[in-house]
Image (cartoon, rainbow, N blue to C red; front, side, top):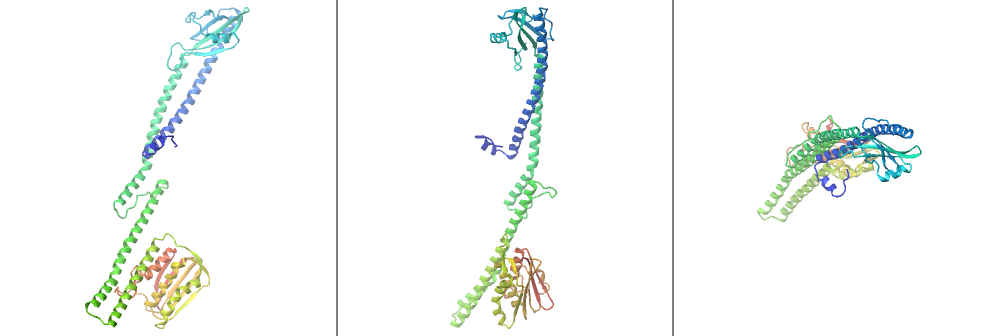
Length: 457
């Protein structure tokens, strides 16, 4: 609804329920006014037609009597008559009129020139006594012009129309009140879930945890879809808050050990004078711990970025080239203890995010070289638009109790947190698989450990 001038801002400041009720009331007022106007017009037209027919019939009988010089016949109940000469003098008149002329001088001149005059005397509202409808026409009697005026009383017609107006006003008023009440109740019922959602959001703003809006499952309207959208938003907010809390908790927990080691190394170095060789060894130890802190921070940041990214950026890439680029940094690492890394990658193009998949493959190889034994084998195949990456080694495999939590953050097969690695490698692999819409799976093959990535490509 568009309102002109200053009414627009005032209307928009009203509560939604009030605006809806006003809109319903205004619309119903227009509809009821139009309907009442149509009914009134139809009834008035029918009454006027009947009144005009009676008046015309009565005037014709008067015309015939005046032409023949006969006595003027009586008309319908409440009818009046008057006969004038060409100068407007009353020749014959009903007793109630006495010699009061019914025509104005202008109307008299018009009838004298041959026009037929029809008009009402008195008004419907306000109520006036003696209301008439008259019809005047010139006739010739014995060669002399005569003006014959026939009139009928409009009392019954006016009373019927006034009663109709009162009934229409009463019915329209009651209908408007009922429609406004129904509109108010409907608006309140429709907006009640919105108010409930608002109170829930206010509760969340006050610090409530695990809040969910009560959305009916058997409805599918705009308000219900709004509730589902708000619940989805609450889920995302809770996930974001959980990631933030987990990140802070993990970072503080995992950084404590290397920082404590750094502090211990520095305290020992400062406790007594050291030789150049001892200081060099201390600096190497400090450098190793600093590098461990850097690796841990980078891994945590990568996991956080993967968890908060709405979507990954897929692009066509040659699978063999991608695998070779991921394997190359680990070939020299494998040569030192006399181990080997073999690759079997299909020559196909896959649609993946190489930025994340390349380090995920590297983490799998690093995990196999660090914790496994013997040869490490990487296979990469594509079937039914799905990419399957599998890394196996020839070690003792994962401890059975470790497999269910192998992809958890900071999960290690060894109990000590001072063991090599941060426990984030497989967690990163799982995050990359999830971001691609795929899965990651770890198992023991009987000849070592196997980790499989299954991704849509």
